[in-house]
Amino acid sequence: MSDIRAACIIHDLETYRTRNPEILEHVRREAIEKEYSNNTKKELKLEWDTERARNERAREAVEKTSVDPLLAEPVLFCYRLRFTGSSECVDDYVSFMEDDDCLSARLPELTQRLDRVIGPDTVWVGHNCDGFDLPVLLNSWSREGHRPPADFPRYRNGRWSGRVWDTMLRMPTKTPFISLENACRAYRLGEFPVVMWDGQAMDGSRVGAAYEAGAYQNIIEYCQVDVHQDDRLYQAQTFAGTWGTYDENSGLAERITAVERSEDLSPPQKALAILSLLDRAGRVPRAA
Image (cartoon, rainbow, N blue to C red; front, side, top):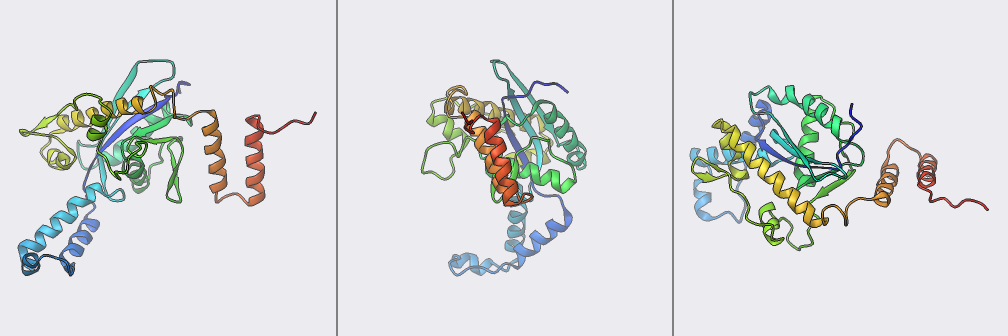
């Protein structure tokens, strides 16, 4: 195994609806049996129990599983690796689009690839990766019974423990969700490249249809554009990785936080572990 570890991995994930037949049946049945709310428009109430309306509710509910971090299934993981002291990047991807069994078969391959280049100090960079990409990946590894990479961020108590840089959450703005394209526009990073499929521009809402049509290359190009643009956004936010990102002090703080949140250590063990971390970092005063 190489000793060279990436300083950061800029990544993006494309997903498809769940293909689990039991979940699909549950989602459809729940949507069909759903009662309309009091504020539902009158014309919708009149059609609510028609076959067309029930089928449309079921279809929409199934499609929404593609954006549910618990149920969505990855079809493509694209990433760019940056290494300390080098201006060159390494671009790669792992596709899960060839057949229905591809996800289970290739998740171990993704783990192996990342284990070769990812270390504990690698920064995981993504746009909305905190709330979507990383949860989808971890849920997929867990569901398929495959271990994630050794240095994949840990999730506990609603937060990620590790070096996660979500470019959406790192933008000072009152807007709760800002698209990658609008974020790049706000930072004057130039025109956002457009990938076409079936006569229209690709976007996240069209990935499912493109996947069903076998337009795999279009999905790959679309995902790669997002990775490259998010890399530019990360470079802008951190002034080419020289400001505001992780350093020795933040790394120490993360390790202390991980100890504090541990459910496997008693309070005395936590105190000793934190003292050991501070001592190794030279933060414990020495007696004269």
